[in-house]
Length: 339
Figure (spheres, rainbow, N blue to C red):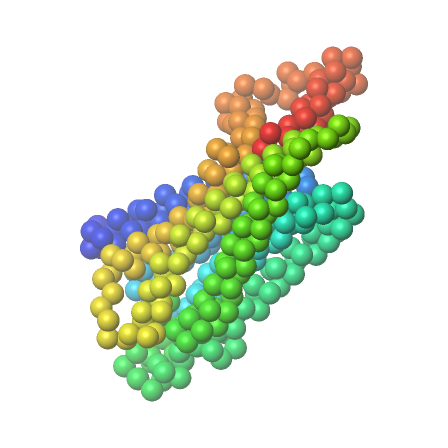
């Protein structure tokens, strides 16, 4: 399939295919893990599932479209624009999901006693829907006029009378939109806000951990120690997102502010690979950093891939052995605080 392509583009397509498969499998595992593990069904994981769904869409939809675009396909202007806007919607949903996660963890540390009363499942679900709604509005803005159609019409060699163009991201998306509105308005501010939130979270947790333990029914050091572990894992997810996406936005800034500057093709490919690769790394972070996910992943692997624990061999529901088994599972879920 790639025999007629330049080696660099063939390598790029091969890496994209690997990332797409890894992203879909890994993030399906994340959603599956939350589905089967009761202890993962708190409000933070609502936002993690939202992030995973966006990453599944990147692997199943965005990357195949990106590969198609890289071949230089001739499409209608608005078809190409819709493909580009889909990428923007999913990227924005990831950013807002990360911001929601940061705010959620901040509230857990700031108001631990009243957190469950303030952050209810209904409110968390509403926040997820709001994040997606804002992402759709921000990502689809180019469809309503903030695009390169007029510039292409001024240069008739780039577009036909039937609005056919060689479909590339920079051909249809305005760099003014990408830099001033998208990057400076909806990417950089949330990233800086999240940096401030996690800094405050770590400050509050360390302040609590340094306090002397008083005799009480619950040990606050255990609670805040658990919060510290999970906050570190989620901050790592944020760091990886920033490292993955900033290079491409920096290249966009160069395109806008220095049109004459040369951008090597391999740098563009690397930047694109980094953005797509970010969708595949989050499940790896969860597996290595969060014990509940690691346990759920291993359970899925053993039961559904290795078939080591088929349903027929599990203790029967209602039997004494089955009731004991269920009690043990519930106890494991309740006691599995080592995130």
